[in-house]
Image (cartoon, rainbow, N blue to C red):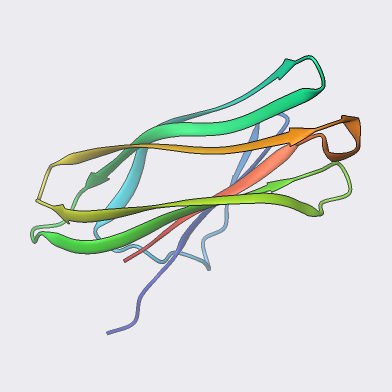
Length: 116
């Protein structure tokens, strides 16, 4: 069975769905938001959202991952979360973060994907 991948590239409010790359057949990102904050010299970038099982069988294991990019499209941070035993129609809330220091690594975009 061939697996497909869902890839979202978010940058400055622009969403692109790349149809050739879909890893999760039974899972979809139902809702999400990207946020950045600064506290002194420390900065935070995060993606929070909900993954839903849209299939007819329980997904026993999956991973949701995010890469954070700077303005040069260089990966400056990563995070991941595992999902387990998600039944049909069920939802899983995720929170993926990256904390960094100084202006040299300002996060301007991210890419998020799910793999079953």
